[in-house]
Image (cartoon, rainbow, N blue to C red; front, side):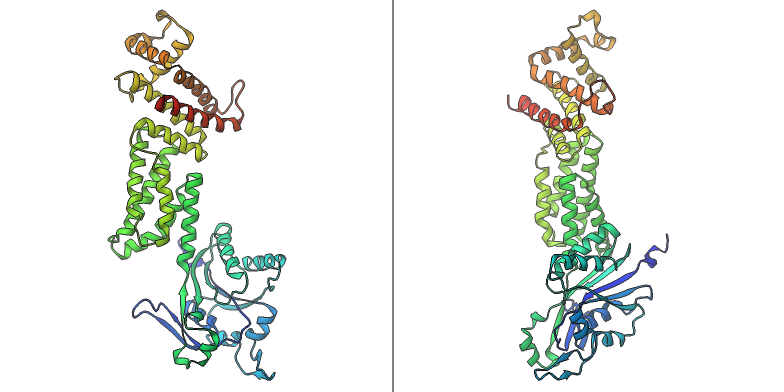
Length: 450
């Protein structure tokens, strides 16, 4: 296990086009003062991207160049183009150019279809995905990816992340259009044909963040956000010795997201308000972060989902139950709603400690006494020992008939789900969803609007 990092294979993927490409100077990282990497008088962008990434690779790694029949003939092999008079133009193909780099890894040409119909596109997908091994580290050049290939490449990347647990290390695009149209570039002297290579990996990371946040919004799981935070933010904090405010705020947000999610999953009723408000504060701090700029609208969606929590314990309990319903945590939703209503009864009817376990049990006992009409001598010992409180609770429950009936219904439904339906006349699984939704709506009406 300790050599896992060394065993990961690095793979370079690129698609070869059919044009007669002009020699240019490809420049990496120009925006970083003093750190640019320039490859001069290079005909194929792949010469530059391969040289930039793969010089220090090992034999176990691989370079894959995907070619159609036409791109194989015109640009993979030497002398594949003709002038306007039909004469062969003497020029090196990509095979010769890359071979001169004398790279340690194997350089492989992989034939693919043109992609002129859906079947051919699926065939391209299969061909490319079959060249990816589990745990690969992928470097991708999409400069000459024709027709639907740029979109297909992104689909393949995300498919492979899930099915083969790959990581994406680079996505490059040689932006010839940044210096002009091809006929204009042709007129420039070679020393002026400086083509920037755009680093598009941040867009792949944004897609990862989008997926992770969507998973939290739809399923309530924060794992993706926490994983991305650790992966992308930790190196920044390390480099800045913990002094990057945006990175610190994102890490704090991920931490509070995890706390909030765990609170819901484990029904920690006392912690709902505190963790929800802490998450709201953490989300506000990252709204203006500049580390991942397009993240702001996604973070706003997270903030919207937590606005229902106000710090009022009963209202937050209802919001928590609703959150559980919306995120398929049905058993937790029943538990949180029933316990919230129990707190509401104690707070509304008495000045007794609503966190006290004995007092909470007495709510259920009072509910039972009320529904069965038992006389004092028929009460259990705890109820008799707390006669005054039980009578107060019974009186309140009698005057709040709808909440009393709701508590009784909830008690039955919660028992059913907690005992896994192993009882007489268990409820059908699908009915729990609609029941919880109705119980939440009913309590909201009975307690906050009537």
